[in-house]
Length: 632
Image 1 (cartoon, rainbow, N blue to C red):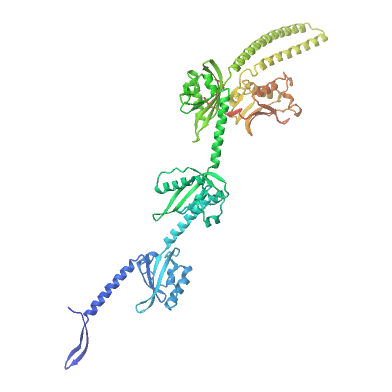
Image 2 (cartoon, rainbow, N blue to C red; image 1 turned 30 degrees about the vertical axis):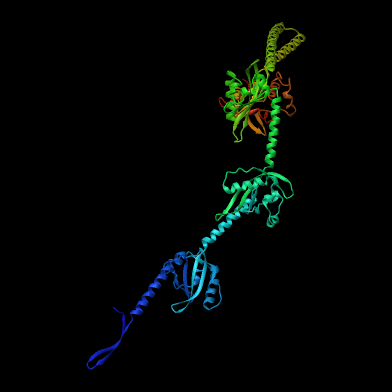
């Protein structure tokens, strides 16, 4: 089989139409054409599957683009063929690219490689490319053919890398530690500001060349080199303390943490941190000195001082405590608390210790403790101690012997009881005599004595009444301060002393105050005084408010009030219309626990009494079981 091409012309021969012509054998030409088509198809396939974009520009228009460029720009298969080159170039680079294309076709010398940005089909996104452009012939005419390599990701990676490096540098400059980098020969290539300042160096010193080993005590340099070998070999390495030398020759203790820098499998240098431990060492020395000082104080104290941890184990007992308990340090240290105390007192102490651990609040108790020399009254302060993790892990107890004080207290109590009994008997006898005297006065008045005698009898009657009121006051005053102060809920006190016949309101008084047990008499007298002397009082308001560290308890009524010249006199003994002891007794009861009272109302607008409770003398009203024991 051969390929041929026939060329013929028609002609008339006699009556017939005949053809004459030439037959040419074109088998070789067809074979060459097929080979050319096959080669062309190979190159088209190669171009279409290239990772780089390929384009041909002729007469300023796109006449060929591969699929990579269409995908890169987001166009369809033929969306840009025949369009001007400028349509796919970002506006900011359009003039540059168009001009260079024209100059290249005109034979001018222009760069073959250069960067510019393509414009995506969305009209916004820029794609940065590196172009490799040259002149060629396309379909018999001059054209520009080029490959476009997308460098957007590469540029982004470079930008991210620079940004990351910038963050690292900024962070290193901000750190309060000395940060450094050095090459394999230990020549410093970078030092942050803090390092330059601490070592007394300048950036120029780093540029001129500094060997890190020169800034270490010469005696320790072999240790540094040994540490470098361990770092490079991957051996476990705990950096020792070094003595660093500043440029001016001064020295400071430091810890050096370093790591090798490996690039392409080879050692490129070291980077690390130098920690100045001068402050830490000074603080450690000061703490040791402080601990030694306090230990000396504890050992010299004439109190039992001991420390119990959360496991109820004895950590420490001072010498005096060991002497009183008749124990040795070996017998109690590291052993259960029962090695110190046992029996009922130990159980009570355990409850107190758990309360201190739970609340983190110091407690003070008075208790009887059995000791080798006999039972002793001890006043013990329990103080929580924090560990390094910030939690309470031990309790410090300081116990003072108050046996003699307790004996004196009980003796005084018995003496007071005897005096009170004597006073009661005396008051009773005087009261009986007053009753007899009043009876005789009444009998004498029934005899209708003359005016002179009658006046005398009335004066005697008034004197008897005064003596009777004074006796009543002595009975109340006798109980003042006899019982120990305690915590009292204000709402319960007001409920017990609520005055009848008036509107009584209590606001914002959810507190407990530390006061004498005669506290109820304070408010009873205030309310009674308002009703008796306020002049048609219809309402009484009691409220509480904070004033700095103090709690103010305010009692107000809508009566006539108290004149300015009497505001201080009303609290003096004997001033008033009746016994003159009511407000005097109020002030005395409050003063026992350092409370004060003042009248601050305006005359004509009602009385206003302010009771000031000092810091530590009030707290939020406790729920059942919340009370803090003062004595045991």
